[in-house]
Image 1 (spheres, rainbow, N blue to C red):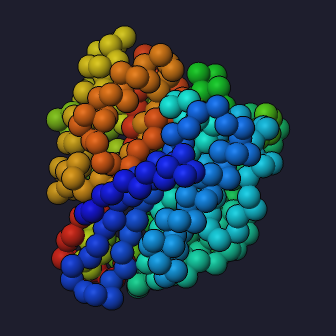
Image 2 (image 1 turned 120 degrees about the horizontal axis):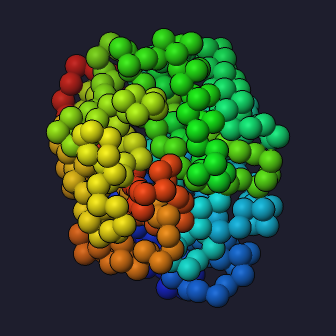
Length: 381
């Protein structure tokens, strides 16, 4: 794992990049995560997004034309006004979410890139990504206007399951990751839970089988009648045992014990690497209780401990983490958490955004992706 910082002074953009470079074969695909954030305050949105796009172009040139983006997420401070000014982007799946970057900027961008990927647009925000022995499907920004959160979640998952079945995939077998962004999470999260639980049960996803790694967090789209926005990641061609689930029972309890349906994390083995997808994780114990209510420092430390335990269960550590997304309920906690992150993870691509967690007592949550070398009997990534 290599990490490097590109301080684009001309554009006022900080670009943090992590690179997984396989060692088994010169022909195996490299993977990159990049987080682009502004270092120059007070610009109009059009000026800031232009600077970000210029910095992105410089990064793409540095990485080479064979490295393709497969997923992008824009974090916006005012999606209703800013989304129309985003560039028309048809090269990969794109997620646009109202979650203000808390460094004072108007927009931040996370980009996941893969060397040698063939990316094809399908429909409804779906993109097919071919490389190695597997087919990957990314979806960004799925939403249904004018529906309550339970109805919207059911319809989104039903539509997603139907479209994936048309491509030979099944929700329970092939979906590796979901993200649910909930407008006014304190009000609408319960509906999301009911809708997701119902669809999962109908598809054989129960406490006796497994669920799907997920983040359910506050976030808004352009249309104020949209209560839930969904992103998804699916892998076609996995063999039995290739994808397994992480529990960290010394630190975390099964989510079904408090009525929700997602996995704490997922590990996916390929011939030369292991992908680890960690769900949104907060300061919780193995009985489902909030740990350290009201204390942002101790909640952050417990959150890190929980995530580290999940990573260790997959044979990984923080040195293998490609990127972090950190969600805060209270903007006043930004400087404290940012200072802690800079001290412990100075080089890791990351962003801190304003996004309340599903329980008001949780002040902070994070998710991440890790990659480590691992020789297995499964096919090439």
